Amino acid sequence: MVKVRFALFFLFVTAVSLSQQTQRIAVAGEVIVTKDEDKELVSIYNASSEKGVATNAEGKFTIEVALNDRVVITALQFQSFTVIVDEEVLKNKRMKIYLNPYVNKLDEVFLSSYNLTGFVGIDAKNIDVIATPDIKLSFDVDADFAPDRFSRIEGNVAQEALGYNTLSNGVNITGLIELLAKAIFPKKDKSTYVDPFLEEMNVVKQLQEKYPADFYAETYGLPLDSVDDFLHFADVNAVTSQMLQPENELKLLQMLLQQSVIYKERYLKD
Image (tube, rainbow, N blue to C red; front, side, top):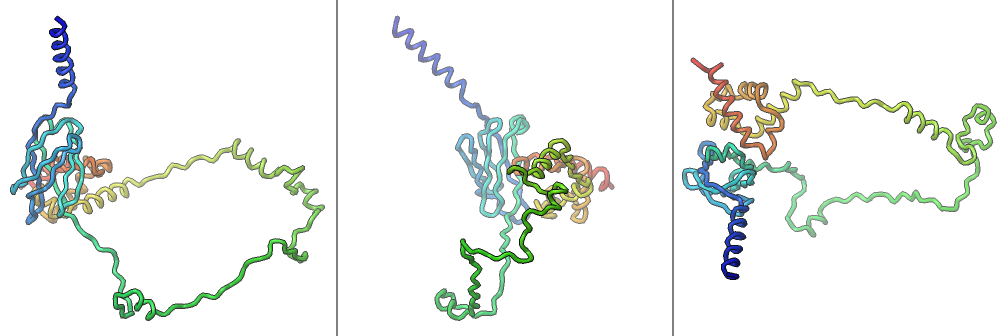
């Protein structure tokens, strides 16, 4: 009887532990890149489950995910970013990832008139060094200076008569008055006004810098000369500055896809 109870207890604990584990489902994914870019062997790593896969030659992959899993996408030729799995991905069991080519920008290069050899010891000797003069500005601590025309007048009767003597029995009267004035009449906070036009231009500029123009043209089927106009249209109707955050990149691309359909129906329809 004891063995039967122990077996039932063991089965109950096992069932509870299995039910508490995160249930993940397999979703089919696809990596979309710009023209002439290689989309094979892109790393798709689920940081939440610590499991990952790589894309095939067509940029497709299958990975198990759950709600709010963090999927990290990395490749040498593309910018790395993280996608948070939402309910839409789980519902459709599909995940589309748009990769932006990584642009390696070099810092400014300064050309020198010196013929450098590459050896620090030799180059240091060939460069002219300007010696700085040693200006001694130190003073003796116990120096006693004689009064002159710049010295303060002690016991100024006029200041005392007008009440300008700020120290009274060791108390700074002026400082106390300033503190009381600040407490009674606090300064009003001036809210910063943001011009809506400047804010809109800032979002459009970030969209232009985030992806190249040919990416918008090829991905959303737009004429190249209509890309900037489309970005202004999307900014006015749907895109917010919050969507430009790295963790919201998937939502941004989906929103741009929806806006491109509306834009083409309104302005590019024959």
